[in-house]
Amino acid sequence: MVSALLSSVTAFIIRVISVLGYPGVAFLMAIQTMAIPMPSEIILPFAGSLVVQGRFSLFALALVGGLGSAVGSSLAYYIGYKGGRPLVNKYGRYILISQHDLDLVEKFFQRFGNVSAFFGQLLPVVRSFVAFPAGAAKMSYPKFVAYTFAGSFLWSLVLGYFGMKLGENWGVLREKLHGFDTAIIVLILLLGVYWIYRHVKNSRRS
Image 1 (cartoon, rainbow, N blue to C red):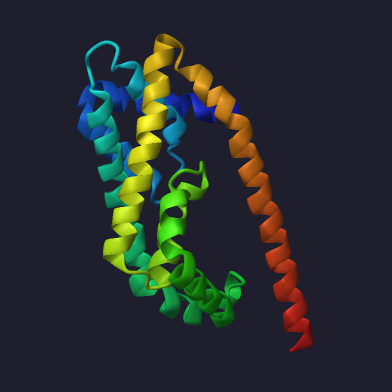
Image 2 (image 1 turned 90 degrees about the vertical axis):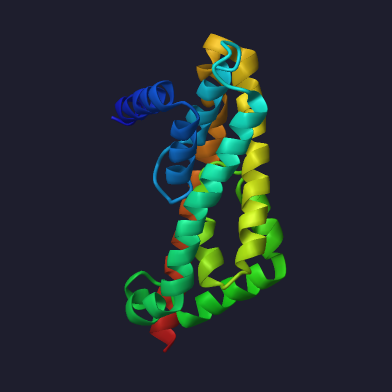
């Protein structure tokens, strides 16, 4: 089932980029940074493979990838900025997020926000979920969008370069990165289990 879903997503990505070109890359990268499963590990290597054909320029591809990510992340940031704390106040107990948790997130981004926004764009899976907590933590938007663009530009440049070098074999890169994706997902799941355990334990105490 997972394989069939990935094949469908890959076919959709190839179709969008083949028809729309640069706007298609920007559109897909914008979606990908809004917590929607649209893997950049497919978008960028495929687009990079078209550099060899003269369809794209590597630098322009990285620029478009960075801009698309900045736009998508900005929308997610805005949702977090406007709705973060009110949403936690109203619905936080249903998803095991407390005011204390949000305070910790705010302190984290106040101290490491720039680094988090930049390096978050260099990690598969994680890059899709950085924007909302950054907005909820009221991280400076100019800094957020600048570091998000810089990180995504670098990510797009690297994956696009490997796609260009691999040419028609660009799909090999996705297979190489799949193990890294899996490791990050497992880590997120383990952290999620600990999160639930901590909240259940604290609720029993109270």
